[in-house]
Length: 417
Image (cartoon, rainbow, N blue to C red; front, side, top):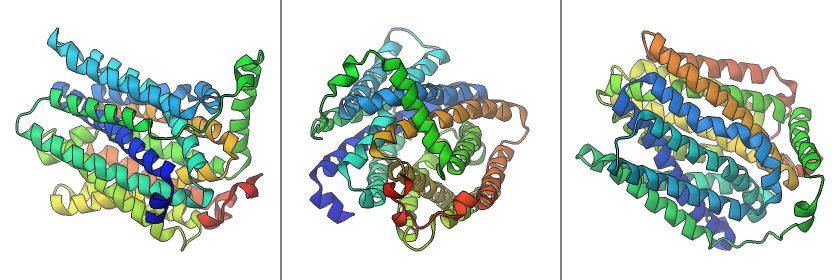
């Protein structure tokens, strides 16, 4: 990974930019959930917040083919600018009147809409900067650096807030980080040339429908189909659990800020996941990693829920392992999205996947809010999540397509054409 960083100038600056962008976006996501729970103590409100975070991504079905033809670096710059402005609004508005919970939900919605454009652009940019054989290294390094940056900023913010600092401080730091991301984006060289025919084409709608169809067709015909189903299912149950984490943390840690503690340790788990992925990718076939990864993640999730009431320190270590295993699965799937499709289809395939995941997350957020309200024990929500992962792993093992997957280093674009 060090060689990749030292020798690839564009990747270095892309890493800096993506780190600032990811940290700024992560701060917003984590602290907005905390703000809503801390202010209103209502699982349905956090469920609606989770819905607002995810529902715009459903429009990836529409956006993806156009992002493939647009200038990717300009797309992510525009997204970064919009997100910076939205956080500024959160700082300014409370000085004039006291906003309701729906104001925060609207802010989340606008913030998330910008991500509909940036997500496929980021997915399509990396393979243009890094060679195919270095994608796992690049994704792992981006994950590690992003998590370290997020952890550093998050810990400082948490320490300031437990000492009495208000949410305004979080928003201010959030704006500064996003502005740094916007500025650093101009260090990434723009190598894309304008495609005049795309803008002058009179049959743009027909072309769009064909491009969208090609993204679906690529997923449907190959090994990506069972993996997409597994990841979509995983995200559904994860969101059902996620919107209840603030309440879960407050129950077991005694304060709503316990949610931030778990979020901080989740970042550590992401680093662990990056190292696990680098260790196992060359030693085992991918199908084994996926099957065992899902089953182990589910088992560890259940153990975490059972241990946290009696031994908080041990539970945190188990939580780091849980997040690490989940991060490993995400890294492998992200790499498959970048390695399997031809380069001109990456954005389309990525956005089809993003839309399907967004639908699952949006539904999961609402169901999670209802579950947190109706179930007598919030622990049960997390246990159901763990059981679902075990079932997903067992179902993957039954798929003939999955069992044919070799080591990830042996998977290439040429094999899928």
